[in-house]
Length: 232
Image (cartoon, rainbow, N blue to C red; front, side, top):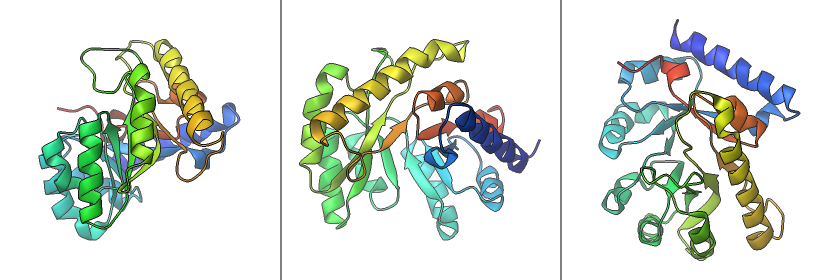
């Protein structure tokens, strides 16, 4: 099956899922996770009309950015980010999904100010408390939110999580629901219970469980395998 056909089927699936749970399909955007995929695969996706891509590794992404700059895709950085790599992203990516510590916040804000922009970010929350996963704990979240809102080079757009790999998508429902509850709590505490400004995004759900994530409030779903096929 071609990438164009996979994208068409996947977007229909997302629309149907939204319809079934009473949501507007326009509320949910698909990020095609293109890490380790060759340039030809991204070009095929772009030719089919898809624009939003998610990358995990800075050096790999930079090569794609250089080759595809004229096509102007919308890049989202979704992997763990080292502080010393931040300068390579600023001004080139639409959103960083993996803010999880004060030192990283400070560098993102500093580099964004140098570029005279405001960088959109999501705070990654480790809702399952997995030691192997990045993300801040729920207990540490509020101080990071407060610091982010005070950082001039950064716009806090929402929250992200990467739940455990599971055999059945339903097993992750509680994790998605937990993040949505945390999101609502942040909104009440820091945004007067309104989706004020840009705080409106919930990045959660992958190929294995994006339908459940949509049912629980996801606005950004990160899907790779169902777009590009199994990685070799």
